[in-house]
Image (cartoon, rainbow, N blue to C red; front, side, top):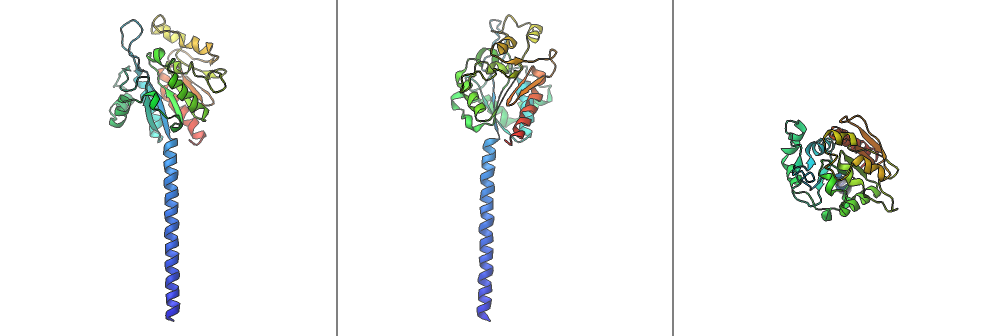
Length: 265
């Protein structure tokens, strides 16, 4: 009888031990999956370091609403946002309007305010960490983003690793000189959008900007689409997403989110 009891006790202990090991293994698997998921759920925002509109002496920079509105959409969906600028550090900001509740929410978020005020330098970015890359606009983007070869290399790698590439307003200026591994421009043969010539005329800066974005996107082989001035308009061509103006910023964020969800990233 005692022998039977001892055998049963040993059996119960063995089952309990096996269950514990199995549970721990499941927890470790879940933990590893979570860590992988965190790496996949990062998005890189590119902002300009250029702070002056040509020879006018007037200040510019990245357009605050073109950062804050997509930021809100993507952060609320669980994505982590990093920021990079050609010079790194604290980039200049334009359209600083805190009566916009989303601008205010972003600007007063201590964590993200610190991140954008200490933006990464391009050489410190690891393209494999990002599921998407997004170019915020602001007139400053026209001067420094098209010719930053390090950022161009990052974008090409993100795109060719099945990532999403996006921009809004003047942000698509950063897409102009990006070539893929096959030697073709990223935007060649793809539907694309950005600040229109008519919008540039309305803000009276056609003679100030170094080029007209609409014209240059067409020159690079982009199939340019547009709507009426300052109306939200987003163009999606696979993993390339572009918006026309500041009014399109939130919709670009939503389009990025849809594309990432469709790819389970």
